[in-house]
Image (cartoon, rainbow, N blue to C red):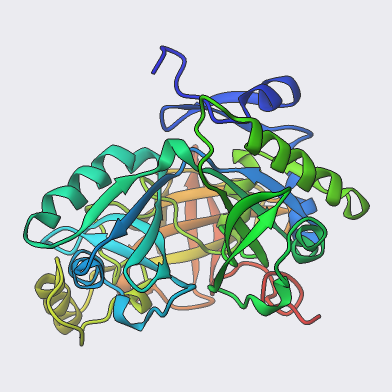
Length: 378
């Protein structure tokens, strides 16, 4: 890796058309046209993200299911081939080592996609835990290009360039297809709250990026009639925050459990032993002292990371992610606050510089799910 950081297959396109910033050891585009127009393109039409910086491993072998059930909190046994789920890996204390999407490609072959910043940490952790299992763990991150096509027009855009009937792929389902003549794996997943797909172009090393470049340009051409926009990390962050999705390193980390983060749906305590199970059972029994909440600012001001949250002049928590919502046109945030105050519609105050700004606790997502997101009314 050079001093500037690693580059994805599409770096030349990003450098020529966007603003490059360092992120998780990579040189990545933060925006092209601008965060707001890119954000709104995804909410109203379609956007295309290069997310090749993410970590990707393939887990195979006769013990693959048992191994993954031990190192992750969700129930891997429920996955049939060509389905996926969201999950986390925990440490022994129940803290979140990372969150990820796991796809079952075949009976004994799984595909895990996790955060770019944790690529090395996760691979080492998985390898260490696999000592007593008959499995093979292969890091394919540098040999697979990964794009996210997101928005209400994502299916129509991709249908022009793939051989699979995309209407047959439900949310968190997967399929193999041909895209621009290349073998591609697709899952109906994403990090924006919208409908869409994550597309994986296999056997495409960064040293030979042609297939990725052709696929990228093909998708952009297919989406022209829907005003597709290439989107950077800036819009990716505002979109996921509006949708109430966690960002590792801000909203979740090894000091936060999935119960505190309010993603307990990924924790299946009835399954056999898994790392962190005992700690999570204990925490569920005794209750959590803090909870992740959504805050909608009711006055002028944008909450940011580490801003403090108050109730009746008493500090009750802190902001973990905050931004200006392009859709709501106001400040929004995620925070951890004392559990007894985590009540929908509760009014609190966020300290922004020397001023305390009024905010309201809301239920995720921040937008009306009947009008936006993958549950919108067609």
